Image (tube, rainbow, N blue to C red; front, side, top):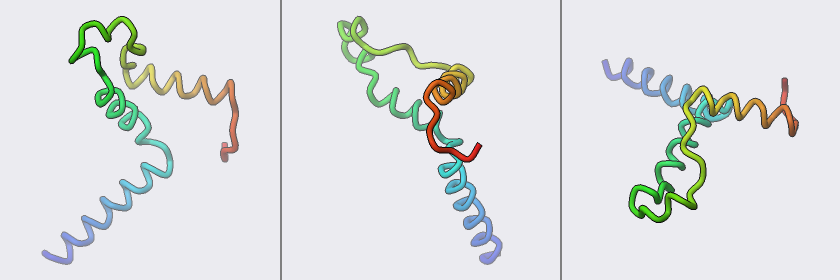
Length: 77
């Protein structure tokens, strides 16, 4: 059982690493950043000058793709 648990942990760690390398965790990072810096919850006056409302995952990936098309950078595909 201990060997199986070690293999499972190694596979999960590798999957986590690959998600980061491939950029699949971009929305998770965006969401965490947005939630950490959302001052409008604590200060009602900050709502007027805060940034845009957090995008849904679908809107985020559409925006991400549009920005990459407008400003292409070195990438494999």
